[in-house]
Amino acid sequence: MDRFGALPVQGRIHHLAIVVTDLETAVKFHAEVLQLPLEQIADVPSQEVRIAFLTAGDSKIELVEPTNTTSGVARFLASKGEGFHHLCLEVADIDAELQRLAGVGVQLINAVAVDGVEGPVAFLHPKSCHGILVELIEAPGGPAWKRLGYGDLSELRIR
Image 1 (cartoon, rainbow, N blue to C red):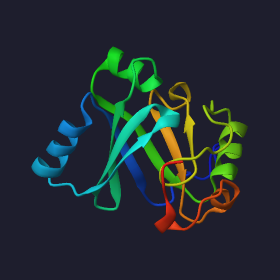
Image 2 (cartoon, helix red, strand yellow):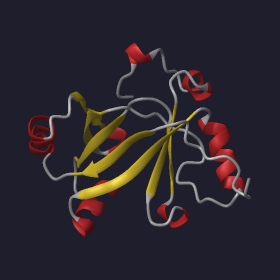
Image 3 (cartoon, rainbow, N blue to C red):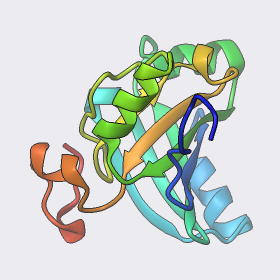
Image 4 (tube, one colour):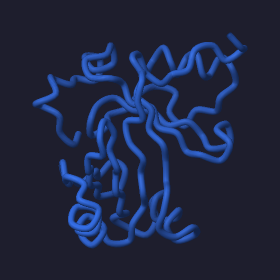
């Protein structure tokens, strides 16, 4: 084992996120042309985006459209255009993982988990991840779910 300890991945990539200029057009392409099943479309006011999740095997594709011109996602879109935005990895205990990562010098955007569409999430700064924005999401029912007031999977909602 190296100085970084165990990998945070619990066996899967939860999702890959793609920034788009027009969510409806992107959803239509991914659902009709690529034949990926649409799971949900939702507004996320806290992130200033609209998102769509499409399933791809055991993972998902998240399409992300900014809802204004000043958010981080809008600035990303303006400077880099449509395309890959972040990688989301599933972890068993997000708080423990954030503590471990901070302990080995990873720059955290979120020092503690925050509400996400599908459970507690936190982001790692691209400067610490070789230029990739990395999101962590806690596996369903993990310790942060109760702390953040999540119910069971059937009760997931935009928070």
